Length: 131
Length: 130
Image (cartoon, rainbow over all chains, first blue to last red; front, side):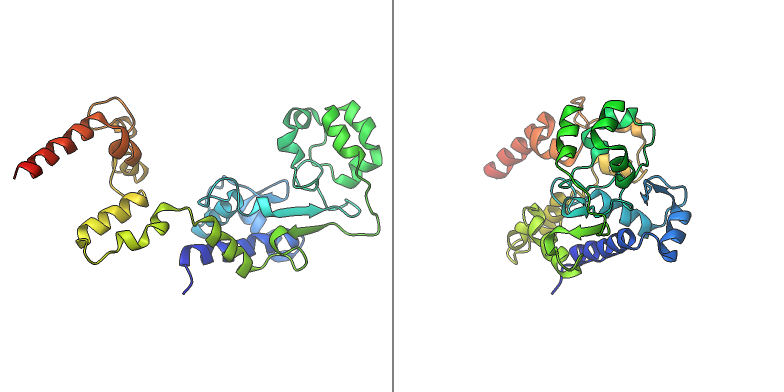
């Protein structure tokens, strides 16, 4: 017998995962337009969130299971050319999210939505100093 | 800032590869509901309500006691904080009914409240003497 609470979370996780993988697809764009987005991730505070969407946000925050986030802690971004990865927002360095780990630097950054590829083209070190 | 540069200095992008998401628990195939489910099962194993299933739902325990314990471990008893969450009480009524100037939640009532502690002792002495 399956435990309903856990299987529900796992299935919701599939939605959230698919939204990340297919973030350019129509269904995903429609959802994000309907509910809002921040850094190409789903936004938390919506005016007219459905119960299903609020549950997705819970998955995003990993609520209810131990400490930390069961979802985000197990998701990594692997940067290839870096064109589709956000420098500050995506967990592309060993799961580190630069926005959170270097929040003061991130506050100073002029382009908060820069991709990894853009930052790379400036050269890491130069950009680090410029910030 | 230098720490940040340090981390970045080791990273070289690979222009021939596309960026992709990786699900750590099943790195090759991406997200799998079954292993997310299994992961959730193991990480909830320290949940009190689940680990004490057999003690709570024991035939020798009266049903009302079982239900009470179950609700307590799931934090579903009508304590003041829960009633406020459900908009039954107003926010300004959040202090403990025992008058101890603490916010009333299940943990406070059952573990640290002086008033309830004395009440329980009183009941115990009455029970023992009868």
